[in-house]
Image (cartoon, rainbow, N blue to C red; front, top):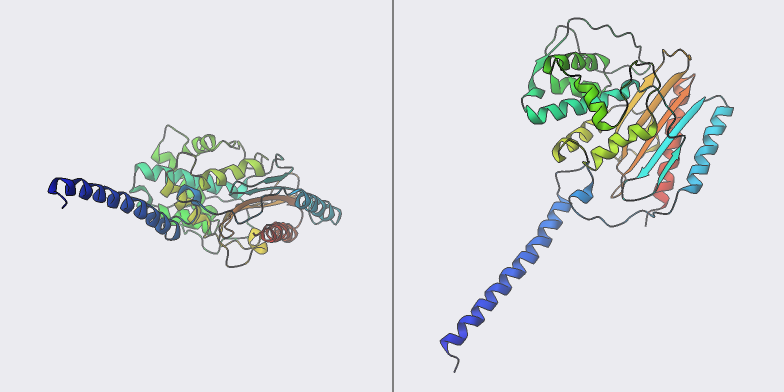
Amino acid sequence: MIQVKQIKPIIVILIVISIALGFIFGYFIKKNVTCNNSKYRYINSDLICDEKVTINKKSYISLKIALEDKIKEDINKKQITSASIYFRDLNDGPTLGIDEYNKFSPASLLKLPMLITYVNLSEEDPKLLDTEIGFDNIEDSLDQFYPPKVTASPNTPYKIKELLTYMIKYSDNRSYYTLREYLKQVDPKKDLLQQTFFDLGIIDPIKTTDDTISVKSYSSIFLQLYNNSFFLDRDASEQVLQVLSESDFDEGLKRGIPSGIRVAHKFGERSDLPSRENQLHDCGIIYYPQNPYLLCVMTRGKDFNKLSDFIGEVSDMVYQEFDSRKI
């Protein structure tokens, strides 16, 4: 007959085992729910859960040769005068660069650091983005070949978060200049936008016509956002990439991507350069299912339509190669 003193240790052991199994089961259930129902759709999923390898990670030598041939062909046809390309598999995969250190005019690409500046400031002042500001008159001497479908109006109050949306989604210059002027009121003693350039590790252009940015340096901004590896917290990085995914510019990277795939990107155009050459750029993250990749293309040439064609064709070549590697 089992004594009472013998029963108690058995009960204790069973309780301990039950608790341990509960923790283990709960951990895997929670991890699975987090992976499948995460609120984060744009930053690196490895920050939340582990993903299976879905794309072959072999080098991109043949693709690089094909892209170099494409550049030479379009230069010979006078479709473009020069181009730079930078690609990176964001799931610990290879990179590819073609003249990735050549400098271009940043143009509207500077609107991304502006967005980051305000999101960073809003972490310290949560009410900032709801602050209403406006403008009486803004001198915008830069004509846009791709004009914004929506633009801010003078003598109209806008919340800062509305102007940020106009600036990124429609690449609205009026919103950009209004936001830039307001930064002087936020902190009259500091150039907050210039500080963002330094924090991001890119050069602050002294003049907007200067060729000061490369595909490699600009791509680093997206890489830092995706991996949440600089001063913005996880939610803020997610917020910035989500706004970038709302861009309505379809004449660049998106031309080579199936419509169902998300793209967080920013384009820039420039036409009033001393060289009399136009420039068109598009850089961003293509959210290929379970394996996003980064692609940045910068171009020079006479015809914006041909530059757009080139960027779209490069994007298609990269996508087709990437998709062919699916495991």
